[in-house]
Length: 430
View (cartoon, rainbow, N blue to C red):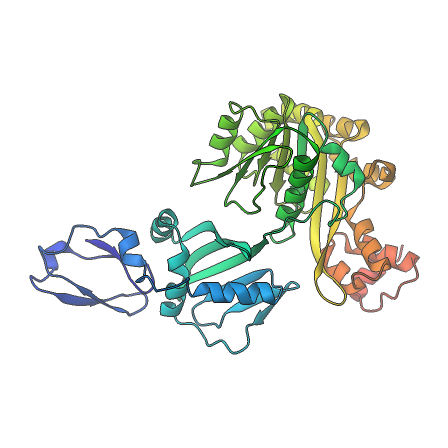
């Protein structure tokens, strides 16, 4: 017989041949919890995972909602729940303890986490030991939820998704990027590490399209994050797992659903990338995200995902379809809060030629000289935030890939860089 431990949710196997005739107890080898079982012949061959794992329903809203409200009140971006630790928040990029909260046990985390998981996700969690879904408190916010299992028991990470979508004006997105949103077709990518605000920027772009065009928008996400109501556009939002099996399945289906704009929450695999490029080529405006650190690296990542014998073809297709790449990172704002630094690549004719000719290493030079087209390197964006005293120099330094280049900008502007590591400061002296 197979079952899930009601405390740590790990799967256990009980040898049917050795089960006694009457009721008996076993200890979970993982968390040492005592599990009472009926005897041989009276227990079903397999107990459904969701019946084993879900704790008894409590009256009123789930207990975790109180923590979600604290999270929003304290303007935190993330909530972390883990056995052996009190509830933790991430505020302005730093992890901190919620004052007055005790250390959680495995039973505590199970009691907090499992009641909010939809049945499909609860079953997936029991089978795979991790799952993703969205949870909403009407009038407060939506939350992107990830449940996982570690050596101490169930844990969870939660990202707040504000009910109000930030607009392109709120984010001060470049006019040239907004002009791209009026194009009939092409590929627009928003990239950056996890937690860099990609979803916020992407939702602002979709909201801009929704407010300025009269078209059909289809979004494919995992899970659904920002909710877009119809403005000038018809918006259909599909969630992987709940409404479709995968990104690539939903993307194939979207081509038969008369879309003008398609948003792909994450371009994870080669097939999804290939379909996205083809969709952009065949008369649709496609928005997507990738986990890359710079705009030039994004172009290389796309091309290098394909076998060597297909890369030249993909270079040509990408040169024809790419319209813009926005790479971003979040920095701590002086005085509290966070602000995004944006690197912007606009697909001008010289940019497309470099992609087609496999000379992407020259893209930073084109971006440096293409400011009149709205292009901007990450270091220039970080430097401007420092110059305007929005971000501290030390914070900008931790966010750049090219530390020597950023220090050189600081030095040319007469800024103090004595805080920088000696070897880097020396390298940036030119």
